[in-house]
Amino acid sequence: MRWKTTYLETLRLKVEKPSLLFLEKITTSHLNQFPFENISKLLKQDKEPNIPSPSELLHNRLIYHTGGTCYTLNANLFQLLKALKFNCRLLQVGGVHLAILVFFADEMYYVDCGATAPNFKPLLLENKKIERAFEQDQVFITPTGDQSFEYKRYLNGAQSGSTWSFRTDQLNTTIEDFTEIMNDSFAEDAPFMTILRCHLYQLDQKRSVSLVNDKFTIRFQEGGAETVKLHSIEEVEKVISQEFRLPNLPIRQAIEGLKKRGHDIFAH
Image 1 (cartoon, helix red, strand yellow):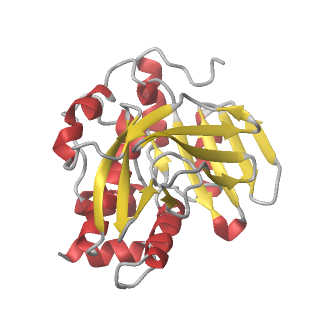
Image 2: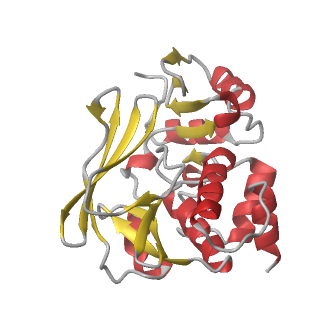
């Protein structure tokens, strides 16, 4: 299993026994090393939907600086955790999202490196509201009943996106159980098939960087954010190369492909 060694090297980690501390090291590094991006998804629109294997994920990151959306990122993180002997299983969230449950004795943790959210530490699922935050970017998971929870995201005090519900007793345990919702995510009008999106945490600089169409935002860990409107493909390429440090990301092809399908990222 050569890819396991490469995966850990990419995360700048060494093999340890399964533990909550090791899991936190993995999730924190994953959010810093693998961008959440839909560029690779846009370029696969006309191909058969599939989730890359760990070897493919690592190759694509090395050559093209890609990461992926939740199906790619969390499915491969799940494979890594299994290879490292963690007790874990996949979790369907909100009917559209793929996350992971990890178990330690009688404790159950929510793990998610595929939502652009500050889930650096695994979230212990218990009978009280829990929060993860990066400045004014907040995630709340609230129990709503026996083995049922709600996931909400807030930016600057306002809810961002829909409320996601999930149950921890669901039977989805293999990636094949997610084939339908994964295929739906490649539909012409699916959320990440009509926009340009890239996000990465850079804790070495105490910030996160985010691109949504022509809007580039830097959010600082110690407070505050800066947003700049971009006006050309060249400006987007410069931001991706210099600010995200992902110079090989095929951003131009994605933008041009979106425009051909009627989605001009600069027409806002």
